[in-house]
Structure formats: C-alpha cells, structure tokens
Image (cartoon, rainbow, N blue to C red; front, side, top):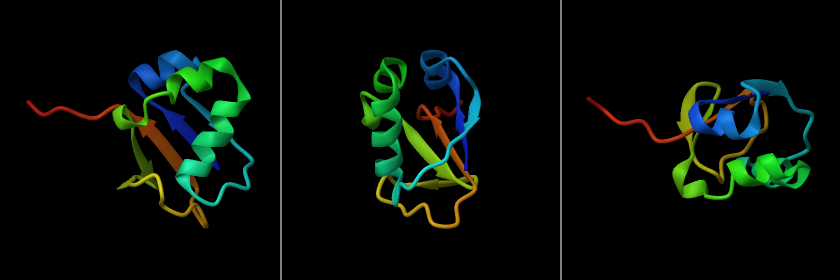
Length: 81
C-alpha cells in the first residue's frame, strides 16, 4: 500500500511517500510496524494525538481496518482560517 506523510510528519521521517508491504490489520498495527523500523518513524509517531489519518482520502480512526485500503495518509490536524 502507498503511505503518504505530510507536513512535520514528512519532515521527521524524511520522505513524502513510500510503498509499504504490511500484514497490519488496522491503522494502529501499521503505526506500530512503522515505529519499530527506525528512530525517525518512532519520533514521528510518538504522539498519535497530534496525527490524523486518512484511508483512501477519507478521514479515519486508528482502529480502522486496512483490508482493501490502497492509500494511507498521515498528517497533523488541520486548522481553518
């Protein structure tokens, strides 16, 4: 699946996107797999209260299943103006 990183999440990880081969059942499982990869991922996902997720461009929750999902995007909360 394609994993996209935006704003400071991208800055901490160092790349805007990557293809990830995963057996994760939920978004939370995917985050755990990514955090275990390297320190930069662990740092980026250290405060999940400050990160939002979209599955195939629809806002979702950490407990959302990943079955059939093609794209996961992580980004900080958006502010209006």
